[in-house]
Length: 129
Image 1 (spheres, helix red, strand yellow):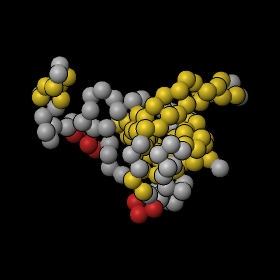
Image 2 (tube, helix red, strand yellow):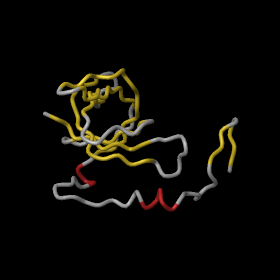
Image 3 (cartoon, helix red, strand yellow):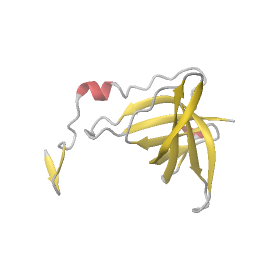
Image 4 (cartoon, helix red, strand yellow):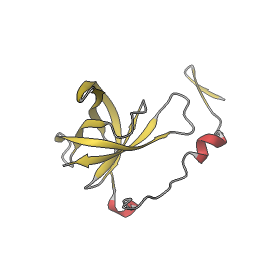
């Protein structure tokens, strides 16, 4: 383990095998190709919906980091694993630094960052138009 200011990090290259295997990407029909995505690393505010009976309540606001974006969705890096098919209200960063567009998105996939013990997750979102 390496240490930085009281935090411990795994040694370079150290990663549990089961975490690595979870990163095997299985393409599903209609899966968007990498060339259709654009890298966009910006802070993103979002709210997650929680099903309550037949209605959904919006939880408090959280922050994450956008990784990439396309016309159909985006990838976020966040500190928890949302439920698959849950709906999030995401403030999508635009090319202009100050502009953000709120939109609804469905959680399509969740992958835990394999070499981080603090529980960071990549979350694939599909925009709901």
